[in-house]
Length: 366
Ligand code: HEM
Image 1 (cartoon, rainbow, N blue to C red):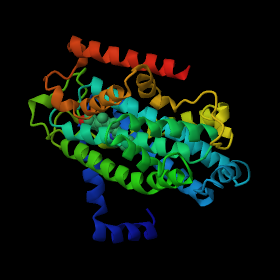
Image 2: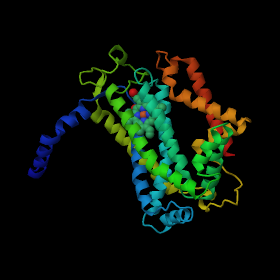
Image 3: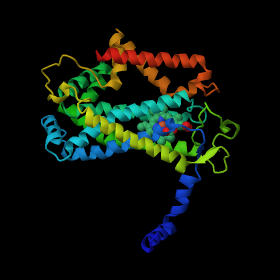
Image 4: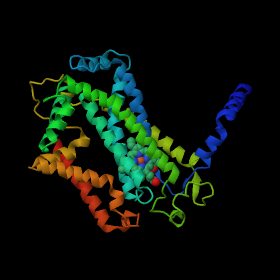
């Protein structure tokens, strides 16, 4: 270390206690020795979110949130702004990858039973993060003001009207009138760039603070002495079954973060139109309904479910109940066993739900 670096380091050491900060957060902080690559998916979601923020800010410089200009401004970003196409592709491909990563993160947490006591609040904050991530997708979809985004939003914002008493109010609140117009665009833009980001950051801080306090769960499929000790002791330095967070887990997380980038650039390079069907390249026209309107892949299952249940009120009520069951699941499943392979009924329910989701998605695409 040369003289200048040493002096900067000493200066910081006196003021912020850098050594102690790094030691307590990196090497003294312990993680279970039998964690696996699935334990990196939360960090992948953090990386994915940061990419969305950075590329989103770049897009904001040229995007115009007005019905008369939005479509043209996005075309200019794609064709005239230097590297505009790259930032837009990263933002669009990234939003899809982020939702996929969060989904896999959630499923693996479920399979390992890591939502159980004392991690109920970690699960609930994660569930709310999932909902907000989907709201990002929903609100961002309208912004390019294309035929697809216009009509998909028209269909989606009409869904609440099936609900008595408050349904019409909710629909009008979302649209800012009786149909999707420039006012809807302004509202969705405001939600997308100024309401959801602070909410997301707040929940992410809560989520990660809880994980840091309690410590990561050991994988229930291997050997671990986690359960024999007080549940929040795991993260401590003296824990005999623990490995230092750095380099043991941080390296794995960095590797998976890089893999996330690789997948993103593979999609952008070899399948640049994958997330841009034809209707997504035509400007919105309120007088011309396209032949097929379908939402993004992550909304296909609930969308198809609503389509096949003849009574819309029943369909929406069922989905609200399913969402509540998902968010409060740790309080419903109080069984002590974490390993899903030792719980045949839960395993059966999980497989049925996954198959039903795949069938509904495939059906909704047709
Ligand atoms: C964008 C959204 C999310 C972010 C940024 C995020 C971030 C993280 C991070 C960094 C970790 C620690 C490392 C790991 O296990 O991967 C973690 C763990 C965890 N996450 Fe998330 N997460 C998100 C969504 C979710 C969702 C949707 C759920 C479930 C509904 C969830 C539930 C949990 C639980 C219970 C843990 C603790 C795991 C353990 O103790 O082993 N998270 N999350």
